[in-house]
Image 1: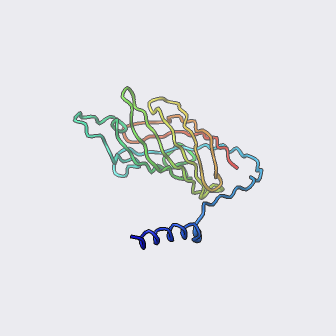
Image 2: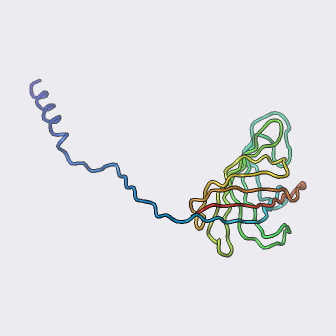
Length: 185
């Protein structure tokens, strides 16, 4: 019993004198004052909602017994998107990038979509750069606004907004005009 007590005291006295192998690291440096830049973008989003090569595919849906097959997706479903971004509204217009991400269809009285999309540019000065949108999109309204919440490449630390206007919509294709204002450094 005495040996156990002595060993405990020795261990307690030795613990505080042991070496420290890790520490919390924090380094704050002054921010180099760079001027903010404002970039205005104009392009068209081309979504294909059905047919042979859809760009939007429903990957999850609530297990509801009703036969909800509303267009473009039933309420309470998740759609994965990989739509092309073009210079003009024509399907043959030059592709300048892709919108990739998720759309969560929710809302009970009308279709409301929460979008998580990355708009990656593949041409010109913006090649390799992207902007991220995360916002509520009241899809049934002809004109609406989404939030730009970030970016990468030339749009690092971006914020801003996107004004959307449905250009055309039928049973298979959706074309949306985007006017985006991006504030970045």
